[in-house]
Image (cartoon, rainbow, N blue to C red; front, side):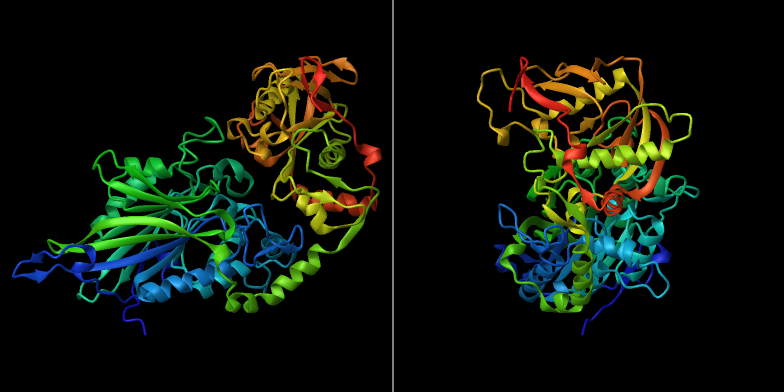
Length: 603
């Protein structure tokens, strides 16, 4: 039986949502190499505890890839999912004593797999007598103490997020997710947990949740006028002193924000996207930060606070439940309070664990339903298409995305003021393993081509702006001298540009000269066989991520919006295949762009 079940939440709205499991283990002074007494030769009081953390779970419960419909695997043989994490968590609790542990998450929980999509859109949790979200079910069984909000929590709209929040037995934290009218936190900003020690003095652990300011841009459709998202540093500076004055012995920040200090959205908003390191550096009084959002693995990283000189430990476990972070804290009783003497972190790999049967049994029916859903046949394809080489060649499978987007925008603008303008379309190679097989095409095949919840917009651009856009995109390629050997594996992702931030644009023809420096690579840019007119007007069919500034591409965020749609592009592709009945690359595929060096094609 837990000895103590007291929990304090940052807002009354969330009161009662989280319960602390308390208890404690005495750690003899000698175990720490400190044999010194305290007053009358008594050993110093000590206590150790562990905070476990996950982030960017993105709807992964099972070690399963719904896009390939088989067990998840990658080149490093990572595993994914909360069922594996659960096994690791139980191991840690057995080792440390359950009452000496806490479990937190840093956001991006309810979007990313067909499992999470199904319970947002196909059998939505918001329906009357609707289901309980599989992520809520799994996290409740595991016994999370708190989770920060990620930006992808807002993808399905605020009602789905609120329903998910209601279904969780722990608070969703967001100290910088504010109500647009009152500027008060729209979610619990923090939670305080009490850990019972054998010394009669509880340890108060404050968990402060911070989310990403980019939500204001990326999910403007869902949050505009409803919520605002100030910077992480500003809000941490407001709340950390408050938590210390409330008696918090340890302050942990769960931040849906990377560590690099960079932003993908340029100067569209004044707040930094990846601000976790800045928070550690600028805000005194923080002991540890669970980092999220960047999908990187950081087992242990120390940042010195500028004001106090104290080192703050940061850790980011790899996405999708591939890793579990452990923060280990050693406390000592000094001058009437608990003081953190030592804090460190490490990660455990979920591929060392079996799936927890409690979780897999609990959600077996949900899993079956989703597998049946993704395997529905929606049409046929005359030939196999793949993205294996789409990062450096104009492939039919990317043309498929562009033809669907261009046709959708043309139909939407038909009969209106802009109906006569030519429609161009942008698409990225989101995954290098997507494929449309010859023969039957299923939902999972089409969905695998577009794994993000992006929606479609139409923006008005000039020929000159399109050229700038393409030059920006072409930075993706490593500059390679004419005649130098070309290894496709080393040709892309220059400056750490991810695949999803390289756009191919259809409806034009152009060469990308990779021997030339950035900014002067687009050669022979033509429309309908003639050099493009810089003043000509074009409609660009573009996803909402790009249109709202994701990737920091030029011109598009400020361009006139002619039309926008709330339907995911993925579903538009599925509906297009269903309506056509057959996918025939011969009808739409064309080589519009190619890589060259001094006029000679690279491939």
